[in-house]
Length: 536
Image 1 (cartoon, rainbow, N blue to C red):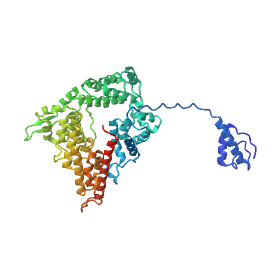
Image 2 (image 1 turned 120 degrees about the vertical axis):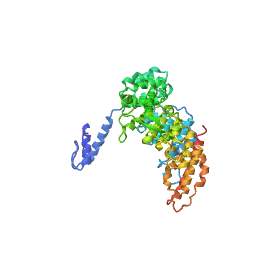
Image 3 (image 1 turned 90 degrees about the horizontal axis):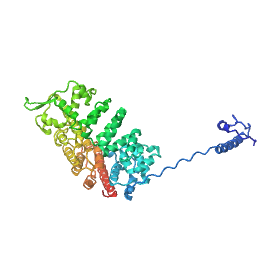
Image 4 (image 1 turned 180 degrees about the horizontal axis):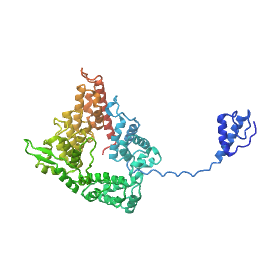
């Protein structure tokens, strides 16, 4: 072996290059060519490796993380903890009744499990928090309930793993604790110096407990805020909106941002006693009248011929969307913003139920009724919503006023849960399930008994008729999540494979049997989940 001198500190790259090319082609400094060159190269590399490691300066030790905060909530019952572990271990399903097989889709049951656990006030088991955050990372719809259940430890973990950073964004102030209400100096400092997310969280938290205090805080910096920030801050006033907010919103009607003006106008129109609502009532009232010269009294419409500056200031958007006439566009906005209480006097002392049955001249009916629908939703007027929905057994599935399933679903949202379920049950009994999916989505879970029976009866009718089964997969998936678990016993008779008629879709009987078996299994599992989480 040749004797070599120790390589200089800057020859490491030469050693690496020689090793890659081979010593026959290249030898580093201090290594003689020849048969002993490979061994000499390895010796030099070993010496240089020791030198490099010995020459490293020690870095400052990383600061040890603070302990995770305590969660004061009671621990989860052992059986419920095991159930949660099973739900989190399941692969995401394909979304309801469209899949084959009789096994429940456990991931689809996780939202209901979290909702019940949160209602009971339990703390999440620490060892399941990583899996819970992973599940919430993949499904944004899970995040609010999952983070509520995870509690303060979720934000602690999120600071240690960038994959869970969404938990910091979702937490108030990005995980920063908000000052208590009595700390007026801290509140003012965070409002004036905090990040945008922190300020939004602060304003929302104050608005929830002190509507006037939040409005006054917003007013202190309103003139200096960016337009996009003013829009977000203004949106927080939806919580606890009242007549006390009117002076501030009236000032916002003169804002330099069109979006801010539009939002302020929308909020004011939701206050039927506001000055803007009165102005809109005058404008909209001038557009409608009852023509009594016809055999049947008829509503006649004279839509506005221009959008004047006063209308624009009050939130009317002058430019109509593509394909929409300007006059109908302006007309719809005026009627939508006018208080619904003005129409009985304006239209001959009639009730809302009588008004919506009046004929409307010159094909204005759809525009007028659609605007009334939007007004009923905005003003949360249940009487007008009932009038526009009509009776569920009406021959026309759209009812006397609603123009789409989406409008009907929004109108139903103004009614109480029991009345909503009863109306949808009557609609399904008359019109079947083909148009009911959106309506079912606004009903409280678990479905009330009349609604659950109506859905099951309609599914049974479709099954006996040999209908194409995959057309009902969405409703079947909803039933798995929304039917009362107590209905499982009543469904056992539908689990057998039915006889297939000549007109039935091939394989439909087997599909229906699988679907009902899965439905029963899922309902029993949901019942067991509720028992494991204990009584409310």
